[in-house]
Amino acid sequence: HKNMGPLTTPTKGLETSRKDKSLGLLCYKFLARSCVSSILIASILTNLSDVERRRIYDIMNVLESLNMVSRLAKNRYTWHGRGKLAQTLAMLKRSGKENRYDQLMQQIRQRKILMNKKNYSQHVHTHINLCLI
Image (cartoon, rainbow, N blue to C red):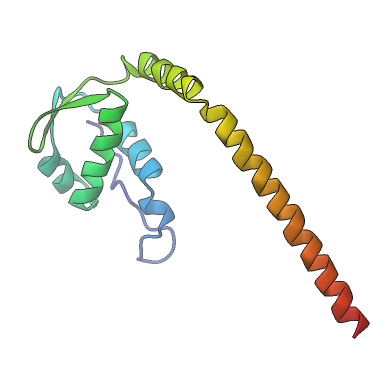
């Protein structure tokens, strides 16, 4: 694989921020390393980067759920790459439609908008009341 530096890089000073440790960013950086080995060994991956072992397993779980890797044994995975990704994403999209996740997300967005309007209205009323004192 290409060595693109550590999976986590500090944003400020020497400490690693929460953003640098986010699972999405870690997966992105992991994939950017272009894995070409057909068998990945999690303990070796941990030694190649500065990521905690449990975060490597988190990354592997995400990749496994997307059919990009499959688990062979403890600490051993087979790399399938992005070949099955379009098919997996299409299946997830179908499943989301069947379970009406789009409707649930719309309901959540509407509730959030209503809550923001209510909070704004309360803030304005509080500000007006304070001005009248």
